[in-house]
Length: 315
Image 1: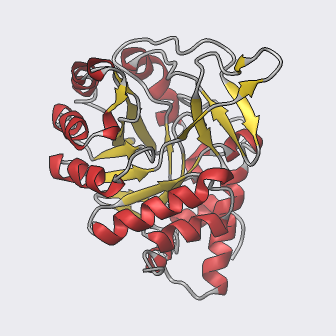
Image 2: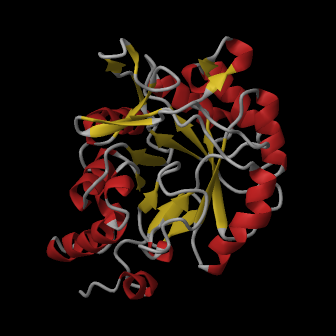
């Protein structure tokens, strides 16, 4: 089997063809929100049409400047960030950025966020008439709820349920991106599904902090941040495994430290239907091509007719 990913993806016998609920993808490899920009920023170094989908950086109903610098710091086996969801707002994105994604035939997953339930409802209103290139909306609910003393929406089954219900006007599938920083992730995933989510994305970053010992204060401008990269992969695998075990009918996107075909297979065996590559895009913007090529090879070597056959095999 050759290395021309685009040709292989169009083949009717494509072993990487993936169904995620009602969403069909050419392969299970997506680029995670916040790691590939709002549009075609990576197009000069990789063919974005070959990935299963690109999840654009989270957008709200309004422009948002994000947190103070510094925002990024490398850690052992990963990175910590406090970007603060900087973005131009959905109206600008729909008018000025989305057309370039359509032109380059990129499969898009839109990510939205808000600081209040009303923010999510307003963002959802702007998603009522999206073009067919946008296959789903990922609800980033792992952000502070200013109406509940800054607690994350995804830290409570009730607030998770509220956000999902507040975005019900979105006609395409909705995926709830959940936080691992909770005591009962299964309960929260169940609340998301009960409220109408068509799938869950597991996981968002792990809360962390780095101290600048010379300045004697937190290094990041916002204080704490979100840890990502290979260091959190075992946490993400466990999260996917536990949710799939308890709620096998909920489609799961696995994310956290994916950097190889082996990592993808591990997530699928834990119960995910698809994965997202996150921090690894910063180290190598071309990594998705290598991962997809290696997945084709693995399927061929192991006589796997469709990659979804390995889903949940670890259970």
